Structure formats: C-alpha cells, structure tokens
Picture 1 (cartoon, rainbow, N blue to C red):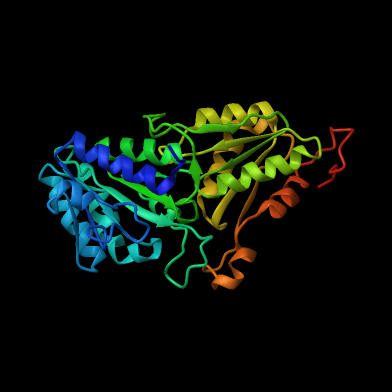
Picture 2 (cartoon, rainbow, N blue to C red; picture 1 turned 90 degrees about the vertical axis):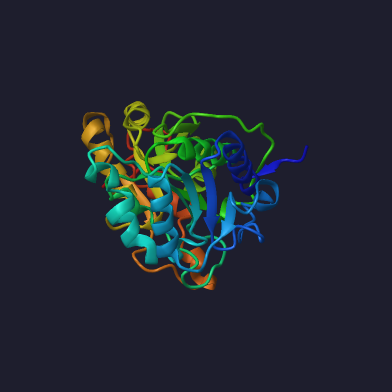
Length: 334
C-alpha cells in the first residue's frame, strides 16, 4: 500500500465515523460532489448518500446555525469552513451559541459539533485564504481546539473530536494535507494529551500544527552543533496538557515556543505563561517565543518572510543563555 496523506487520513476518519454512527452528518461548501477543495470529503456522498454528506449555500453563518439546530436534535454535525478566514461570518454563531449552549441550559443540551477549518499558511494563498485563527477560538470558553501535526493524529484527533460531547474546532494545517506517512490508522491518544516527537535534554521546543515540522527541523539542525533538543507537539490546544509540557521543561531547563500566528496575545503567549508559572525554579533562561509577525498574512511572494523557519528558531536558541555549557559556541549573556 502507498503511504497515506493527511487528507486521506482525515477522509478515513470521516468514513469510519459515518459508518459507526448514523447520527454523524457532514456538510459545507463543495464537500459533496466535488469532495472538498482539498478532497478531504472525496467519495463520501457517493458512498453514504447525499443525506449524510451534502453541499450547502455559500453562507457560513447559515452553515453553523443549521449545525446548531441539528446538534440540538440529536445529530453529530461535522462542518467544513473551507478556508480559515472564510469562517469569520460564522464567528458570532460560534462564540455566542455553539460555545455557550451547554452552560446556558445547565447541561440539559449539548451541541457535539466538529467545525473543520483548514488553517495557517505555507501554500501561497491569496487574501482571506490563509490565517491563523486559533487564538480566537482558544480564548472562547466552551470550545475545544485541536491541531494535528501528523498523518496519524489527523485520523486520531478527528475520530475523538466527532465522538466528543462538546463542540470542537478542528484546525487542519493546509500545507500538510499532502504530507505522507507509511502507517496504520488507529485510535491514538485522546484530546488533551500532548506528544513528545523528539526526546532531548538541552531545551524544549513546543509547537502545534504546521509549526511542529519547523521544530523538528530546527532540532535536527541544532543536533549538528551538539545540542540535544526535545520537541513537544501540543496536539490539543484546549484542553491543554500541562503535565507533559511541565515535565519536559523541568527536565531541560529551557523552553522555546513556536507558532505561525502573530505573536501578540497568541496561544504561544499562554503556553509561555503556563510554563513560567509551573517551572520558574527549573528555568535557566526566560521562556522565548518565535511566531509570525504582528501583521495580516502577507501576499504569497512575501509569505516565506513572515512564517517562522529554522533560521529564526536557531536565532532564538542563541538567546537561551547557554553559559553553563563550556563547549557551546552559542554562549551569550542577556
């Protein structure tokens, strides 16, 4: 069998969820006959019928409103927003109703909706086709927010998200849709559990979604200089796995958080604060962040200057006060 792409893993998760539960329905713009812009829903209408996977009008607020009503009536809607910045017309519905119905009804009603959002950059998309909106959703109580970084997690996290009783914002890194892995798709760790992608002892790189590859490539580059860098994949932004990340940072004593979104008030800032609060007496240097700049996503030809890359991560590692390493060329004073 050829290696599985992330898009195929997501398709398999949707297929298995449709087969396992008659309450699961999939809808959104172009998800039916076309199979979605990124072909994630390819063949689902043909195989399960247009009452289980169907197209909607181009009206994101209407899509979410429809999903709320279906979820309140016992269905498990999985909706696609097509592109991250296309979701903003539905934002009011998401924060005012999807996130609050369980609380508003004192638990009498839940809305087990999965909102699939292709997010982040790296594809040279034009305006409104690339954004990193995870901060908006993570800041909204009542929503769970996940971002897979691997083919295996694309399957695992989507299956867990569909089965979850609460609404889940499922962020799919666009640049990774056609990444490949030769693996068997099985149910892995649940929401709320981070993963160690590379073990190390000198510093911890924390990332999620498309930034995990950047962290791994940076760790490999640092290894050529004799540095043993650990990489932690957050996987689940909300709920957040403090235990795994705290254990890693207490072991290494240094921490760098990588995110593609703009830095100010981002998810990376929350991670840095949580690490500092829980690991203060173990830290040999301040917790640092590498992020996108505080600007809208730039035009395609300038995107590579905006996105965090290995060089920017290595520059940040330079600032992690390696003075206790006598063999270190990066030794600095701050």
